[in-house]
Amino acid sequence: MRPRLQIHIRLLVKIFLYSINATQKFCNTDLTQIVTPNTRAAVIKAVIMSTNADNKTNIKNPDSGAYKKIYKLAPSMLAADFTNLGRDVGAIEAAGAHYLHIDVMDGVFVNNISFGLPVIERVRKISRLVFDVHLMIVEPSRYIEAFANAGADIINVHAEASPRPIEDLRQIKSLGKIPALTIKPDTPAEDIYGYLPYTDMVLVMSVEPGFGGQAFLAHTLKKAEQLANHIAVNNLGIDIEMDGGIGFNNLKDVLSAGVNVIVAGSSVFRSRNVGGSVRAFYDFFNDFVD
Ligand code: DX5
Ligand code: ZN
Image 1 (spheres, rainbow, N blue to C red):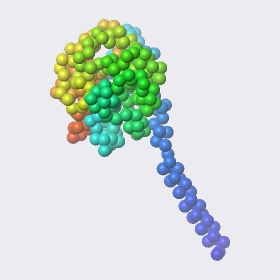
Image 2 (image 1 turned 30 degrees about the vertical axis):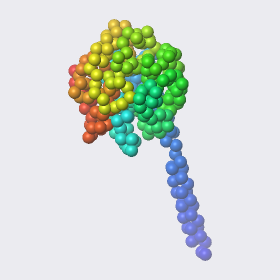
Image 3 (image 1 turned 90 degrees about the horizontal axis):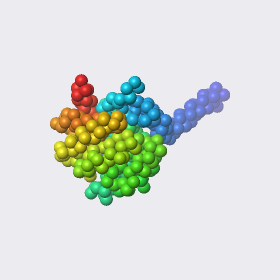
């Protein structure tokens, strides 16, 4: 073979081998490296707009010390299309939702089983949303660390499910996560007053926990209002989230009660236009504030 031709062939083989190597490297890229804990922390920091030492997700006025509410939407993954989970989660993220609400059910605390750690770990790899994990499980302390490691950012424990809520809330905080305390529709607000200094959010259930797509229980509005007043009078700056049966028919009542974090399952993921529905919620929030 002529020496010149030999050089050409060697060069072509080199290019070929290099491209195979590069393709392999790309295919082996671990997506967890793209959404690192650090980038997530930055996202959470952006959501937690006040970088107050107290870690609240509302803005604190440095002069008066009073809090200004930030309205946030938390679409509930339970109503998503599980055969197209990545697409649905991507759609709410692109449309600007703050949180992804994730309902974990154990078949004991509630009469249903949903999904658990492996699903959250997988979704964590494709999303930078703040994960608002609602644990409907007995003795949540057994799993708090595991959910923190799986990618939860906010961890909600039920007051009715936990033998020691203060310890649980402290543990969540010590893991660098946002602690939240949840109550069922018939649990009185006074039952949790003593726990409020240890939590950054209260989640008031407006349906019996366990299933999506249920009718909104209007009597829970009074309780939300009572909690909102208590929080305002004591300037605690805690978020109030409401979960279950919320849509555009009752959203004004919910916001008027003082709720500032809205969980919406069916009204987001079962709508024809998932992203459009997220944007419509935020438009509604803006009109409400004006
Ligand atoms: C019920 C869950 C809710 C539910 C809300 O146990 O906690 O988060 O997914 O779904 P919708 O908005 O459809 O009532
Ligand atoms: Zn929920």
